[in-house]
Amino acid sequence: MTRCSATTKLASNPNTGGWIFPPFTLPGKMSTLKIIVRKRQKKVLLYRGAKLVYEAFAAHGGPGTSNGKRKILKWHYGAVSALYEPSTWFSFGATFENRVYGWPQPGKEGFVKVWGKEYRARRRNRNEGDIWYGGRWYPIWKDMNPFGVAMADLEPGSIELHGTGKDKGGRDVFPPVTHGCVRTYNKDILQIKRLVSVGTEVEITD
Image (tube, rainbow, N blue to C red; front, side, top):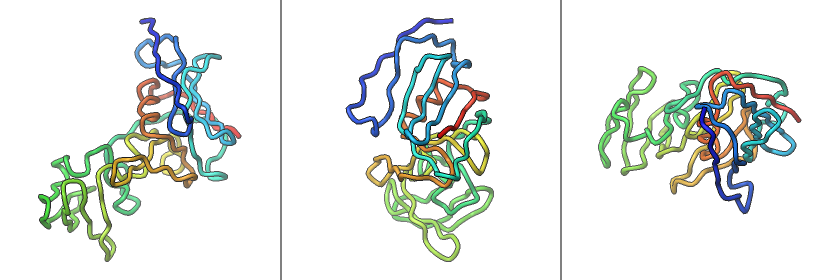
């Protein structure tokens, strides 16, 4: 077990991200951590025992984000879901750099391979392209995935804890509500991912 003190500057505006409260004990992953989502306060709070160690701004899906205790079942990176339109297929900077997808070179047309299928695609430039799906072209850009850079399964397909998509300039896009998930900023979901393990309890409250 290693004793360490983590320090960060407090954000001048809490809506731009979270902060960490030093010092705390960090034995690898903090398996004794508990996450509490307070919907009215729009906050994700990480506690170790009674001590608050991390706090971040969050949005949720209103009635769709039901109260109760759950556990983190699995962490996801990269492509997240085949159930929705192409905006959910790419994440974490892998949209164009990952050779598995087979994107054509900038200015070219071709096909991409996603979820075991091929889709017609055209590459506009280094960070933008389009996919033909359902009779129309869907614009794609780097890191656009609405689930952000990482996602934790709480109730797969219904309630997830995840980051947020980015606009074409690389800035976090933060819609005020979700369909039922809990959304936080990308730097915050990565910090949460660093601190907690699969199996960590997550309690959602009013």
